[in-house]
Image (cartoon, rainbow, N blue to C red; front, side, top):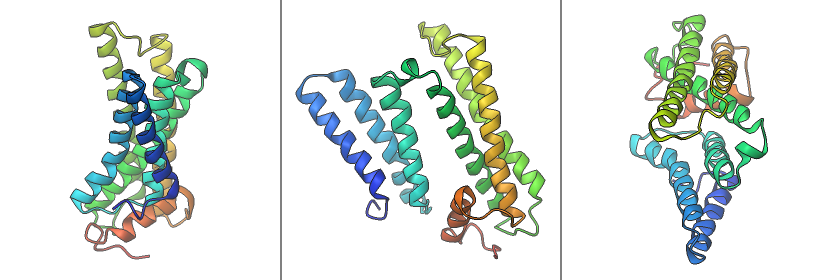
Length: 211
């Protein structure tokens, strides 16, 4: 399960485990908690994929591990959100691209991988809406946390929320466009390569798939 993962993902998991142990030894409980939560969440996709018998490309797992680590550990422990104004923008954009691609592979399953039967525009539109919906739900969550517990997740309020949604829309468009290009046979390698690898390695979901 873990042997096939990239060296980068395994290195990050090892580093987080070391941080947890060191933080506990030095009684830095907050850092230990954040590091442990980051480790658990970054391992979750591997465990869930194993449980569901779904093969997720190691490169996509590595991307998720980097994203989760950058969002929780670097963002919270080292305050990257406060130190770098663009950190939140990058995180939102990257997550939107990822969710756009996830939305694409999910709806492509409905066509069992038949590229001729799947309408590229409709599939891409669904992928875009899926990613943007996830981003919107996150903004609602931030608003609820701020109003209920007095947090400051929205930072500058309306400006922060609208900036996040605009970035989410751009990222979702990139993810959806990748799926569109894949269906039209115009996208190879890069992000489209991740989609192609997922489809090829999960034949039971894409019985009608053909190159």
